[in-house]
Image (cartoon, rainbow, N blue to C red):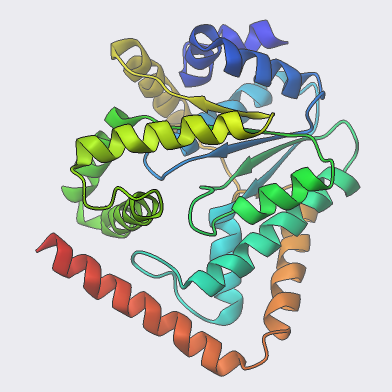
Length: 292
């Protein structure tokens, strides 16, 4: 089965052929030695491209059931439950914590309640209350999840530049910059240049991977990786990857139940919603000032 995935001319195949630790981790995922694989890192580093490629490769083979749990999908679902629009930039830290709690419980449902042969693909940044607690809790419960952080500075810069030329991508650019600033501040390099930040962030993720088993950092660069990513994009343009980042439907329904339950338990809901909206407005204004 691994040969089928590695032979693909797209990004997944390229990563499997050129990065031995990732190849070993993916082989364990296919063999169900690890039930879950979490793809993490900053926005703009290729997470969606790689995840979509895995889903498309699975379509061709379909030797096992595949489930998906994405932080972004649960983020949108929780804010919708709150009656609050997605902000341009960062979401209130307390709301991010709630999203991470729903993410954790949805992943646990997938790992513990879906058929044992199901593999679970997970997406979460693991930055500033965006899934770190969920991964920690799941690991402490003994669940087998491989965490892969994507760190591709050249890809990040290209996505940022493309987004800054396209007004329709303004919200995505705001999120990229907000998460980058938050990560840089957290590791103490917020005042450094972009080049210096990228080096420090790469070192940060390397230390993170060394801190515990089941973690690795995946990077790629050069024309071959660009062509592989372009092949993935051509394939998903022809056969779009459908779904909301939460599948099968049982998992999406469970996430909705969890969102409703957690919102019902907020002591002063009107105040909380007001705080979330105000924080989003402040972050949007801050982003505009920094761009100016």
